[in-house]
Image 1 (spheres, rainbow over the protein chains, first blue to last red):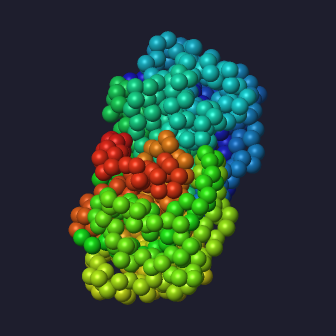
Image 2 (cartoon, chains in turn orange, yellow; image 1 turned 135 degrees about the horizontal axis):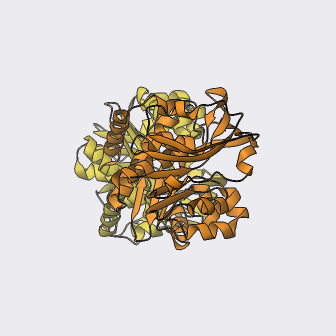
Image 3 (cartoon, each protein chain N blue to C red; image 1 turned 45 degrees about the vertical axis):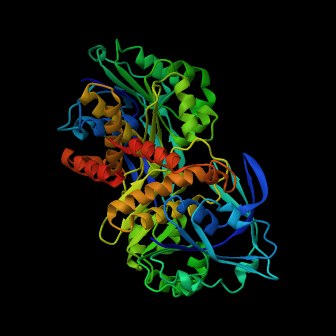
Length: 301
Length: 301
């Protein structure tokens, strides 16, 4: 089924205890699409400047990623991000951000995408997320990501958005900030009260937690990864695996959601094993299925 | 089957964001025994001063905890600990420690305990743990806990101990410190190389991870507890549930180890729900079984 993603394309510079990469491809929509395309065709919406050194058509060669919604804006500059990871890579500092084209008008959702059934609104201003969502006719399942800046400074817009989406994906800190609750289980419950029927809280290497409005609770540890080179894109890859699997399944029952989270978890473990998109570019669906089976067996008692 | 524990009895003073308790009962052997006694009879070894305000026989009324090995030492003072928890209670600061009787000669293991098959050596100096272990004839499965102070300052003794035990239970920080590895999976592997056939890494609310020398890997998230009043004793209760279940099962295959970790996880969730021993004192085996079932269903996909 048709899966649409709106998000960023970035030129990333990353420092980790394992190494350093300058000007590599990144961005939420890119990681998401790479991950989701293992399961379902992806409709891509994003904007770059005419300085962008990457050819996304080439990056996605062999994958069903529709780039009709990729806008190259003349005279604008591509989004840039630089960050560093420390210690066990649980801590990240942002070294610099140049929003560039992301601070301008958002890209338009192409008319041919209006019938998309599954939609992921990657992290951006909630007002923009709503504007993008309004360009889709009758989505069946809409998930969104958010971050501290919007929770703190765009509270009203975010509140509006939460009433219009089915699923919010956020990390533990963000869940605590949004809900005002310290306990993550209670935090997830409070976020459910704000609108979405499904809340997924990501806890880094500690895994994730799902709560639904009809009382379903699912907890999954992170994949026991031994190779962690660069955590950039882990969350967006998680969302890509999650939404890709849901779009492939074409339904949103609780078993589908659980499996979708497991796929998201496994995909993220490949992302962090290499810099930039390299971890995702070098694997097959079989590799993913193998790790899924390992994870499944690792949690049974 | 006979389960022996050596550890501390403490007079604890605890501050948490939820409240404050002075001079309440604590100590590793006490938490351990309370937890383990849901599954198997416990043989208790510990020492208090004659100032101890608690009647342990009364505390363990209705539970099969043999106090033959409890020594009340005339003229000595009972161990005291005071600590504070902050934020989401993941951080603890020790406000004061008075080792008192714990700085003196260890208690003796009674002769009637020499035939114990299952042994847990709670955290203390590794030389003392070895001295206690030598007083048991042919234990079948010996587990031990340790902490930063021994890892850093008693490295050689700890190395000796690790060759004599079957299972080391430690937290994530300690596993990193002991192994010199940042990645927890690799850290557990390095600790296996030091001797024990089973390593269990506790990660607080993130759950735990088991690695065995024959390649078994098990990961379990923490129980999704909404009530967290006082984390004191969570680790010792975890160990108590773990070892109590193993002693009850009377075998140490991989399924038993997995279930034992699950019981330990669930028991710890009751401990942290109240101050001191109150969380464990007020529950039944049925309550434990119910949470085990909830946890089992929460991780399946």
